[in-house]
Amino acid sequence: MQNDMRSCRDNIGLLVETSWEVCNKIGGIYTVLSTKARVLQEKYGDRLVFVGPDVWTPDNPSPYFVERKTLLKQASSKLKLPYDISIRVGRWNIPGSPMVVLVKFEGVYAHLNDIFGKMWELYGVDSMHSYGDYNEGCAFAVASAIVMKALSDHLKVSGNNVTAHFNEWTTAMGLLYLKMILPSAATLFTTHATSIGRSICGNGKPLYDYFTGYNGDQMARELNMEAKHSLEKTAAHQADCFTAVSDLTADECAQLLDIRPQVVTPNGFEPDFVPGGKRYNDLRKSGRERLLSIAKALKGQEYDDSTVIVATSGRNEYRNKGLDLFLDSLVSLEGMKPEKNVLALVLVPAWVKGTSRELVDSLKKGTALGDAPDYMTHRLNNEDCDSVACRIRNLESSGKLQGKVSVIYVPCYLDGNDGIVNINYYDLLPALDMTVFPSYYEPWGYTPLESVAFSKPTVTTDKSGFGQWVLSHFVNSMLSCGVKVVGRTDSNYGDAANEIGHQLMEYARFNGEEVATASRAALATSEKADWKFFISEYYKAFSVAARNRDARQK
Image 1 (tube, helix red, strand yellow):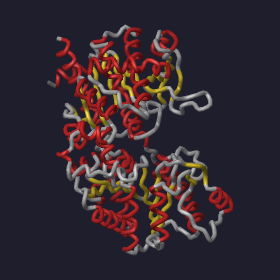
Image 2: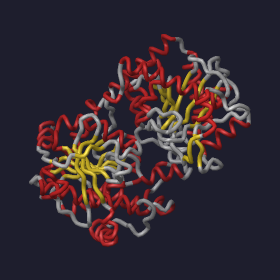
Image 3: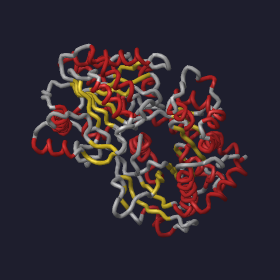
Image 4: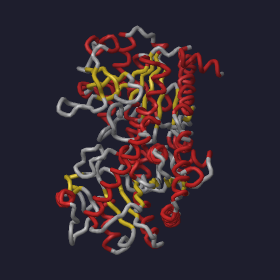
């Protein structure tokens, strides 16, 4: 079996992987692909090609893409593509610098009805009830498949030596289309979170107490998710190898998609993303100075360097990401009367209108806002209904957060140019003391893994793939592994909030030696999640795909 795996992966002449997040930083999948790229590049060299959407303009170029027109035997000028599809070829500006093809796909829209009909005829994909971003995802996915076939022909790589990897429902139609036009290619489909599972949670339904009673097709009809669910489920069944990112998600797929992934491919991390030595210390010093000056300006009080800075971050999903639980855990912490100031940051993007002009002026002058303390660095278009803003406003106005615990909402992407913090997220991580990611629904959980990679102890839950991985490999405590995994159910919200509050209080009481121990333990845990340990599962998936492709060709 081991020799078969080695033979299959070494016979790959062209490994293409596509995602909406190639050179397009939106969420966690960007981190998955960009951090594993180097280890794949070391193995396959320029036989590895990523395919992403060309959603950029000359006025708004991708900061991650470096165009190189001569790559892939001048494919950008020589490929003859239908539907007015065009491409740009270059390298992804990340460790490993893999080759990447960005695809212009707008011309596919005019042909989608015919394509949807063909997908129904061949595979039974129901696109009748599509809406929203369904067409956009499908147009890009089909264009990507067409480009993959054209690259195979242009580079004279036999279809039997092509392995094509598709991520999430947004590329699922590309897998089906490639199977139609290049059936000899080996295909993989990875779900990072099922569309219907995320929808169940996002609609406030209890996923876990009634998990075994859910039927994916039924819930898709109830939640108006029929098209996406049908597409995702079909791709999972039609792929030569279906994978998921955690055992948690594998169970979800088995229940809601009626198929268990053949391989679980956990997400690793690329240590080159973490600055070292003097740069790390400089980032910590400058980051803390900036955060504490913002807090002083907003809250009108002094924060010395003993202040414990804790943060949560990620996609702005109030319940799924546990933003509600994080805020209520701060109330629990306040009730314990910590001796040190605790500055809690909610670093999640929202519908930003612009920077807080009052805060900008106060920061320039080095003064506080005066008689009207605030909790937001930016103004929102929907401040009256944004869930995070409303909850913080309620907690402060009711006096539940008026002591040692202060909370600040930074509702923007931390790209270094937000107008207030002006430090990108990875450069800000050294400034933190610890993090909390109390997710209700989290197939893997990159944010806590990133935290420990930056030597920052973290609190997460057993409803994240990362949390379950920690529970299966380490002693569950910050001093032992830098991570505390809190149990979450559909009925223990208050207990979970109190437990997180206790963990925050425990950290606030740590002496210098204990802080150093927790930091070292966090880093040691992250080192066990290096891609060099997890990449073997991808090699296994490539082998499964090749073997199943060979079986269906016979």
